[in-house]
Amino acid sequence: MAKKKESPRIAFRLTESEKKKIEAAAKSGLTVSEYMRPRALGYEPKAVQPDAYFVLCEKLDRLTEPQFSQAVNEAAIKLIS
Image 1 (cartoon, rainbow, N blue to C red):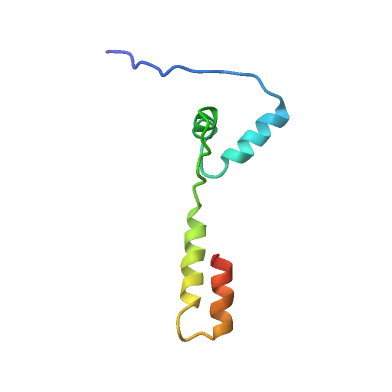
Image 2: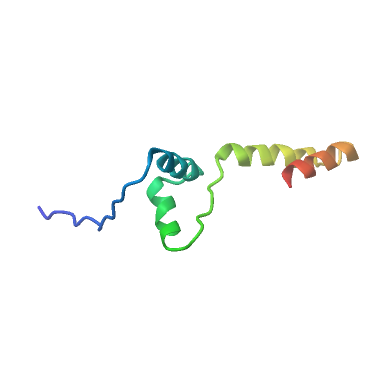
């Protein structure tokens, strides 16, 4: 049975405060590795929106349907923006 070749690794030390900041930044739907890899290469990773965000947008979108008042439509559009 052939051994699976592991990817190269880079390890570094940081303070507990720095670690917490990185973990908090990565909570946008990415793992710490998925967050750090593009950051180290000079890119800003895009946040992954949770499913609840899309459910909320769908509900707000339904509020902009014609049967609702202009005030409700404007409030919904403001929240979506």
